[in-house]
Length: 285
Length: 289
Image (tube, rainbow over all chains, first blue to last red; front, side, top):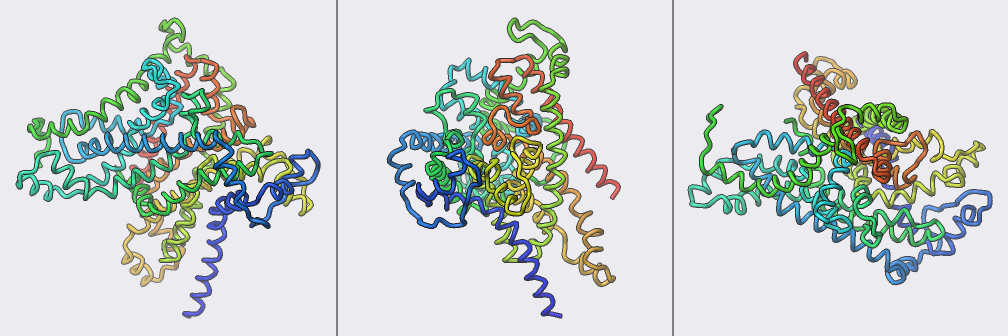
């Protein structure tokens, strides 16, 4: 009886590992490609590059791994370097802004009663559900009126006031026990002190969850810079990558991996928070 | 708890101060734009003259709008049910597997961390006319396709959406599954219920409340699939994946502002209604069950 069970279990694991491997395969693909070296890539891609017949070849791992394309990306491609830093700056600025504005807002919504709270919060939820396309035109006009177009702030500012992180952090702050807040108040702590010394430490998981989800979102920005930034020197890496021609596949691979690495480390370090953040979005109203 | 009392203590107003910076910014960058879209949808772009429903009439006879609308609806109707069923299926197994299960779950979450721009490179390798997929088919003696320039592009997009969101939905389902008490299952097993019977009459009904939120979140995530579609195929992809966002981008580039405003309002209303409808359906489901 026991033995049959374990065989069945092994079968299930084997059966589930296949899609799990498929889910992760792109990472392996990109890594392999970035280490492949120019000649091997050229040989693999020759049917496309030379316009001949036949098909692209690919092997799971590079035959002659080399870091050459990495060096080329770092030293010989200033435009890639600029765009990588554009991505970094944009993402960090957005997240810093969300911390500064969104965290107190989430605390206010979670722990205070004030006039209009219910209406405001409902509006926040509705805004959270609207895709970019709905707001794109008027956001453009507002930004134009403020003379912010063609400036990184045109992407950063609207994102700072995104209502999604407020909603996520609100969920966590609601879990801070009122009794602790009351006792801090009795000890003479003011509103700010309660927020900084009671709310933030207890709700920190929510803040980190919102940051992890936010990083993965803003590291990937496509639509906003595409609409608000015409000047390519301001573009983030995510817009630059698809424009690399396959004849420069080595560079495309190295650049892809350079995008992947920060996101992957945030994922590894923040996976628990990522899961908590995902679940916080789903708790029933 | 003083329910229904409409007076606020001085301390409560401190809450408003916490929220105020966010309210101001959200008002300027999101709410005012939203209201402005509604106003614009009823007026002419250049003169700002009130035109009633003329813009709406214009978009509903616009072939590009109808195509994009049809594709977007089709995409939503196809990919969300597949995602929900497939992720539930995996979640049920992973939930019961303990440590191995949570490792595999991590693997399914990995796609969330892979930037759209990076994965597009793999797409280009796979789906080119001379790409890896056709190479594989060739070896099997099957004639290949120009995948991205055929109706298959739609299914590639569906696949990409499912690949990206599987882990997200698995996490949500597992959260729902963990909420079901083990005692209920034991009681049913004592009564002689098998695995399948347990799943149908205990697991599924108990997951019904989660279904609403998971559907809504999957819907919201489905808008992001435009990124992959745009990155791999640009402004004018194969007509089967010409989505609402493509249309908005193109109208934006052409400065078709009044059509854009009307279409944005229709989009917003459609999303809002859909979510209300889902909520309605599931709440009435709760009442009956």
